[in-house]
Image (cartoon, rainbow, N blue to C red; front, side, top):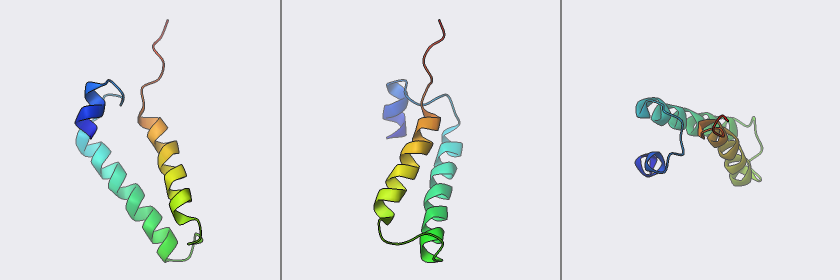
Length: 66
């Protein structure tokens, strides 16, 4: 999936290992927050999707200068 996104020029140039570790950290962190009771389980999927959307925007290329 990452390779396909790179072919489209979507993610900023970043080491793929860093992207993989970041993704795993986010998923693990969210899971722990839900399991430990720091976040309500009701609506968990919607909240997780929203968090991933926000963070995904950080990987996207910004508009070209000029």
